[in-house]
Length: 266
Image (cartoon, rainbow, N blue to C red; front, top):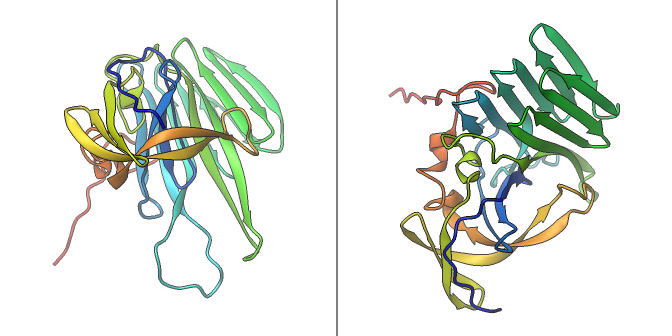
């Protein structure tokens, strides 16, 4: 593998979260990507995107990986099982689960099943539902795709449904946009150097991080198989790459912006 060293900010990038859950920031203009994993308790809700200027919000709730009956102990892996999307200016509220989709705009509400191909249009909003893919465009603001996955562990006879969130267009969001994904919507400057046997130093946001070369699957176009994308994997839940800590992005509800406060009673 060749040493790659660069300093730049990309005007075009793709940000997504998928798997258990894997976060990836793809930079096509640089032919490179950064990624990190976050695994928290089932029921935890993370803020992915928040743009105060437009009122656009995306939150994701984690669900536990299904376990074989009688299994005890060990680490509980999680997936994204529910998404809450709001666009205050357009009056849009969207809840996506592995079972179906509920769309509300102003006083109208529509419920859809993943098995029902649909195309809906509202004021400033377009929605298209095909086999396990939901694509939403919100008036010159943002376009994103939600993918529903079904994973089967044949040896255990277990079936796990979960969601992936893929940003298709985000450059029209304001400079105030933030969140686990939103903070990267306007690009990120970094250098990679000191490559040695798949391990390298990542220089980003004033930090020097030890990263490894890995692979993540991008299901934006191929829902079933995905595309293998090489990326620099940042350990410790993205510490040093994301602003603050992963726990800073935990919110109190699927459509909430306030941080969840955990009280300890002694």
